[in-house]
Length: 391
Image 1: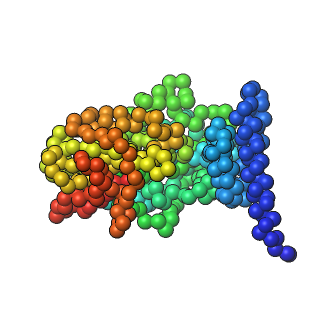
Image 2: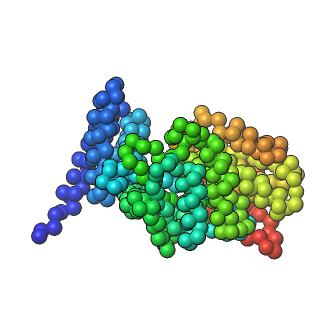
Image 3: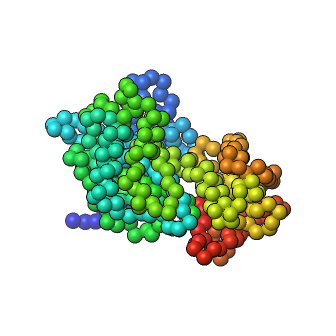
């Protein structure tokens, strides 16, 4: 068999990227639900074929092009790519079923290490019991991965994520467990605050509810409250020495975005608690300095923590801008509100912008002081406290 030259595959990839762009653009200007479904079906079929071919470059090429030329079409394509990645058709007792990969983000902070890795059969069974009772709709089946994932251990890219979601979907029809002794070669980095993820797939016959809040008597806020109170009891021993809270279990990409958003405020609150414990002070004795940092455009805010009337930069938090946010988004008001609610009233906001400077030696970000200089953090050490840093 003659090996095809690379140029053939490259041209096919370019043609498929062009087709993705064309269909997504057509969908973005559709004016009827019937036409929407026509373009959605065509886009879904093509994306599923590309995922099976594991052609990540074609998906990224189309998304990159649309992000610069047609934001609405980009949204349409991104929605379909995510749906195809996390959703699979399955059979349940000779009945058509639909499976969706879900994630449960756990926000945690600790002066020591935050756990990751295998959970064990006992914890899995406890999680399964509470998820069935509190989170998922009646009559659903679901799988769980026997692993607590750090962000670095999650599958990279749409194609790898689709492969994992397919395995979880297959196991979900028998309420199975995916054994992951080693999720990836990546070792979790040491941060003061970080996110961990529980993964699985929930399945039901087509047209039936997957989550408890889809049922008539289900209220999302109440479901999350009950889950937070009872659902994670089996993980308390694993998170010894850590503060931890769960976000709402959601479909994979929705949960990922929600954790990105929630972790920003969580990091601020965790830093304040950490410094109070470390220095034996009250929050009102801290000063926070906020600066907007630009690359080609505004990309993040950096918040430096200092002790009132003292020089050293004790700690810092990066508040990255997320999709849909820009210089017109009032992130500073959100940051101020969180700091004041935590007890910090001495807040300085620099009016000019700063470069996204990092330490030449360690690569960590530098944070603003009162004079407008970007400084390296100098967290005071204690005998039992390592020196973690923040995202």
